[in-house]
Amino acid sequence: MRLSLSLLLCVTVAACAPQSDSSDATSDNSSEGMADAVASFPDPNSPDGEENAVPTSWTFRADRSDREYTVGADSTADVLFVNMTPGWHITSGPAGIYYHPAASVSGSFTATTDIHLFDPAGRREAFGLLFGGANLDGDEQAYTYFLIRQGGEFLIKERMGDDTRVISDWTAHESIKSHEGGQDETALNKLAVRVGDSDVEFVVNDAVVATRSRDEFRTDGTIGIRVNHGLNLHVSDFGLDTSGT
Image (tube, rainbow, N blue to C red):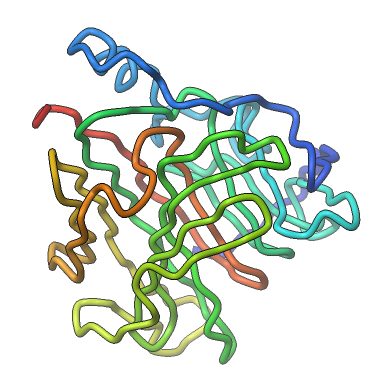
């Protein structure tokens, strides 16, 4: 899957002030509230806006706040982020997060994503899921994130404003697939975060790579994708399951 896009749809995104507001976790823990969260969750099979164009309702926020970045549909933008059914294609410039205002949940749930890694050209930059997001458009942004990288390692961290805290440092696990070479080849990894009543399981390709106590970090809030700099990815699935609640 190689990109060949001539369409340019560029939007300017302030690294420190994204346009969308998905700041708070939903406070409705009822089955009706959870059903609403699933119903409004972004659908990888239904483009948010035009195909091969920047998703209409998503927000990108860069880690760096010293400049503004463009998000567009070709390589002239700082970040290429487009609808490409099923899912979305990302070619990252700066490291940052991608989230949709409807992707918010509380209580017990499973968040999932399938991410195809294109040739990383020797880089070992990380990518994966974020959850428990709050105030994502402000100075007090907070979220927990579960990342993997080329070489077969995973990381769990928490962000609070400009500070980050390591929950589980880089650890190798045999279930994580690395890119094996070839510009047109991809490595597909299926990530999941299973939030239960007391524990959280971190899963890659159906293998539980870590289990932590739920009270160690944020779980209620926005769910999204985190991508470090200089990566070419296709996110073919992004889902939420609350059936276990």
